[in-house]
Image (cartoon, rainbow, N blue to C red; front, side):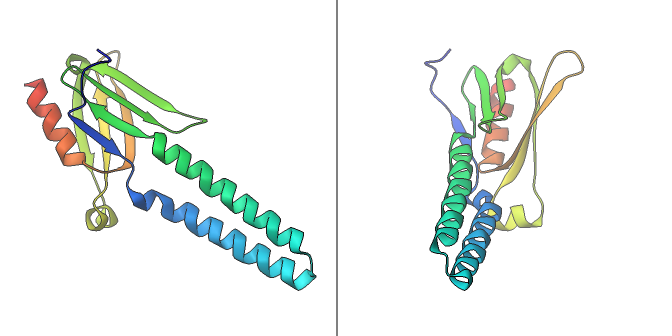
Amino acid sequence: MKNTPAIVTCRKHWSAFIPTGIISLTVVVVGVAAGTHAGNPATALGCIVIAALILGADILATNMSRLTITSTEVTGRVGVLHSVKLTAPISRVQDVSISNGVLGKLLGYHTIIVTTAGTGGQEFVFKGFCNGPEFQQTFLTLAS
């Protein structure tokens, strides 16, 4: 099934970088101010390196996060260190639901919830993803 082409691929929305960007910018500003005030450029440089590592880790995690539907299966992955993975044939997926709040409606991202069959059913939640309605409609078409 690995050679089946993707019909829809959902990725994290660009807004996923906003919290990490704010944190990284704050670390840089505070570090540069502290380093300048103390006359120690190593403090400023250290804070810039820490901010770059924080932002780099978030970029890596966001770029690795995706949700894909093919004609035969649904696959998904979120995270790097603590990753959640989903691989299920279409026949084992019970439901795909989407939701979004006010900010999600304005910016165009959704929370996509994939419920799989099995003991009690398992929900996989993909927060902040693009193409939610397209993904859901494709699933409904394939499942019928």
